[in-house]
Image (cartoon, rainbow, N blue to C red):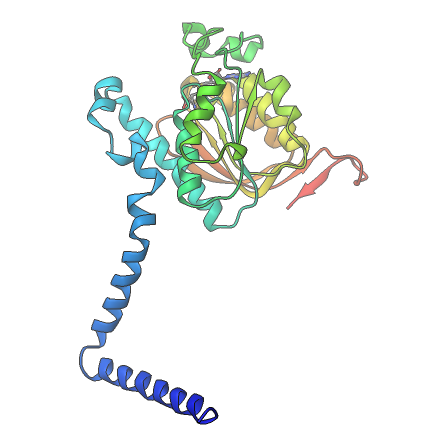
Length: 300
Ligand SMILES: C[S@@+](CC[C@H](N)C(=O)[O-])C[C@H]1O[C@@H](n2cnc3c(N)ncnc32)[C@H](O)[C@@H]1O
């Protein structure tokens, strides 16, 4: 009996499977497939819908809620467009297997940081979220380039403006979506903090929202110099088209200079809001001198 039962049962299983296939084939081929899909969807329902972190992000859940509209007016639509771009960028690095952590320069209200955190949770990006800000508002514009910026001249980017929430509140906001140990807050001027990030880290998504030319240079130079930007990384500039979209000012000028200094090869991802613009980084030469003759090492 013991020897016979596996043969018997496997024979029965086979016959049953063939019978089911034939039944499906002869009667309603779509019914079984639909039933299976329905059950699968049911199992994913809780994860994808009921508990999807992105549903709690105001800009995305209600597609511009009444309170957002009341508070920000027409600008609420822009916030939504920016949030959408950040979510798509997280989806891209997950889907395209771009290595590395996520980093934001300029956190102020924690609005975009929490979108990034929610998207990382939603798409199950396993990395860290690095957040850098002075937590004291904008620095004094010292370079001639920044002194010529329209928002500096109007006072909108004057020293101490755009002073947002504290580092502790920012962490709390992001902890709604990510575990504490994956949130890394760097508090202080970018000229000091960006260069102190562990050079062994690699970044797959960089959100540059620190407005000024000098701040952008301070943020990005150490990362490119130390080979910390991954192949395929997406870099989003929130203030790209500020300053009448002049290439001589702001984030545009900083990126132009970095492009020459590090021979950065990119794909242009286009505008994603009235002021935002993104790129994919393919290749560049960092300044790691130890293992290259000419003091430059090629990434990717
Ligand atoms: C436009 S706000 C960022 C908005 C933010 N992403 C949000 O969702 O609310 C610009 C931020 O950049 C920060 N910032 C600009 N230059 C900086 C620098 N050199 N060092 C540190 N923080 C800087 C300011 O403190 C400010 O919080």
